[in-house]
Length: 347
Image (cartoon, rainbow, N blue to C red; front, side):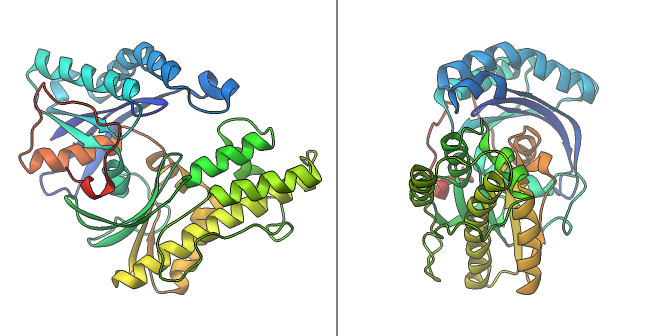
């Protein structure tokens, strides 16, 4: 089954055609096109919903056309999968309405996909894996992005249970807010990651919130406050060692927390397979520390390539294929869902 995936939940307009076998053992990415909006939102230090919607409107048709052309044309497309939520209402509407129009015009079956489910299943895409092979069920997955930070137990594509989530800021949001405080631009994660590679992560003490061993919840708002208080006293360091040390110290606090909770979740569930997902999973230090720490605890780490971690439509196409193969279909009354409880990920 060749599925056209469409993703427009936030600030990436993406389309991808993925060829998925009936037993889900193969998920070949035939095309993967993404139009980014970084330049649109950079002046504001974050995503502006109205601007995001307008940018999606401009990009959606050419992005889909390119993805379909690269996959061999419309005759190669058997079905549609579109991000139904969670996300920004206007942004989601662009993708969903476009998918409805295509489904109606070309008589193609269609399903709506939860964006989080896409991230959780992205490790099954046939791209070169950085650590380990494709995971077997069950596994414990960390979704860490600008809007979400949560741990899940995944027993099958349709059996997903939340184990713990952030009480306030997501990990990616924390990176962006710290970068904004320090005048580092948007998005903040890649900039902090780059600076941190040369810094000393022990130079500036930063809090590790929610350290309780049994707690699988997260909280990053206090870290942002700690950085703001430090900057108020010391000022924003000039470029060089001072700024690199601050970036490394902040990144270490976030990464240590994420990895510690991921390992704790695996041990609590008795599942020795861990998967990283979400945009923050592209962070070099997180990827490396996950590998080292999981190996130390006898856990197999599955880390998809960065292209599968950040928002993309290939993961939506694969998640949609699992639903289509199971017989699910959506009709033209499908509505977007700006919020979608993690406990409802498979639906």
